[in-house]
Length: 145
Image (cartoon, rainbow, N blue to C red; front, side, top):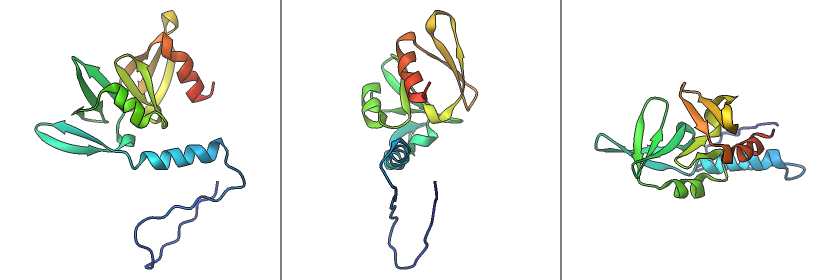
């Protein structure tokens, strides 16, 4: 892949042009990643509202009918339900790992098998989370193995 950046005073805003011989999986992945940057989530913490970028979110979790977004160092409450998060980020690297959690695949550090067909994933921030047996095949497909 070749990346070329042209800076010019004539341009207002940002324009991205993708040139390729054929639309393939690699191009689609690049386009999907670019589109995910447009999607943001509002999170609240200590009475303040924060704008969270998808790439900053390690995972979402639902606890006691509330949804939380976990970043490297903070936890924010979000107003979205997990099914809405799946709809919003389902085409990018977010993955339903359990009934109560959605993980950002870009933030996975390692994966280990567990008894009963489940997997344990270690996130880049050091947290360990489980992937339910029913979601393991989808994770393997998304990761390409």
